[in-house]
Image (cartoon, protein in one colour):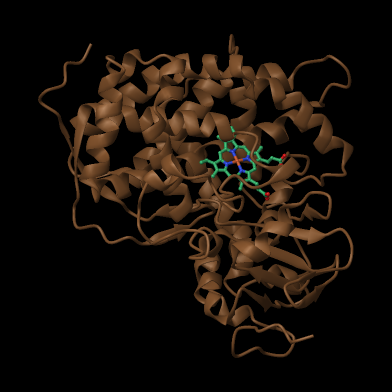
Length: 437
Ligand code: HEM
């Protein structure tokens, strides 16, 4: 068997740690994709990690019968915040199954209708304020605030003030910064062998309890979490699930809206087609019904294409259930296998002109099986439908009412914890021809 390539400058004991960027690990890993369709990274006492960059090698690894999810370094650092949260528990863990089943009704079609009704005015209000405020608009910052307002109001039925929302976002960032402290020297926590509950975790839990205990709040997520049919979740388990849903449910959608607006500001022809589709509904975006959103297929293709080029969750990690191979290389269940979406989603073997932003590729051809921005199998994203609905509706509001003006921004992608365009700004001016209700 051939040896697996690895980044240059491997150092005894430390391994490849110094070859990877602590601040942008996914992008620095992708920088080594030239090593081949699969290469290896070893860092301290973590298991060997095989990085898979091609669609052909990734495809068999999606099979849940032979492969399962593992929590990589980033999730291991975050898990103490919400140890029983859906994102962190093992697939074989009874708790994962129970919480997953419990949450199904919160992502059903009838819940989606409820989300639609409550999120539409929230989006209209935010976007109106973006355009009325100082220009250019700090898109990365404001999409984060909008996404958090949507998940708290629509998902949890709690209307927070801007200060309360900022407090959560700042606490979350502070926490991630502290849990990432090991990354000053990447993976330092592995050397020290510790994974303590970081400071700020108490503040985060109190904020989440405040949301859960909002008087009169009645929304799909708390309803599902507090259902007492069968084995009920304990208070701590409910808080853990809420923490995961509040973080995973806004960081990712905010980044997706920001990347989509970045691409749209550079592709006026795509904006025009999306606008024609919105106009064909005969409604102002504020009047769009749940079914109208489902019918906005071109806009949906815009988002699919955004997530192909900019998968905000840039990878997921699996391990084999038994000894197997990846290409010509032997793999054991102890190895971690990192499905690198930044490379797989641009594999020229399955995507023509892979670096081009072209929503039509989703409208006209079958989607390759290795297009996986929402993960795969049993552990795929539970919030996919909600996320796509929210992003389509947000873009419909922006494009329906406003013109986008690029500001000379040069794409700079931050990873904190998911991908976003750092410091994206855009001009937003009201379109003259539009009549608002
Ligand atoms: C564009 C937006 C989103 C993207 C790209 C995204 C992506 C992902 C990915 C890749 C995974 C799998 C992670 C892994 O295998 O390790 C995942 C899992 C998850 N996502 Fe999302 N997500 C998005 C939005 C949301 C929303 C809106 C929610 C909830 C309101 C949510 C809640 C979750 C949860 C709870 C899991 C864990 C599911 C499980 O392990 O059973 N996500 N997401």
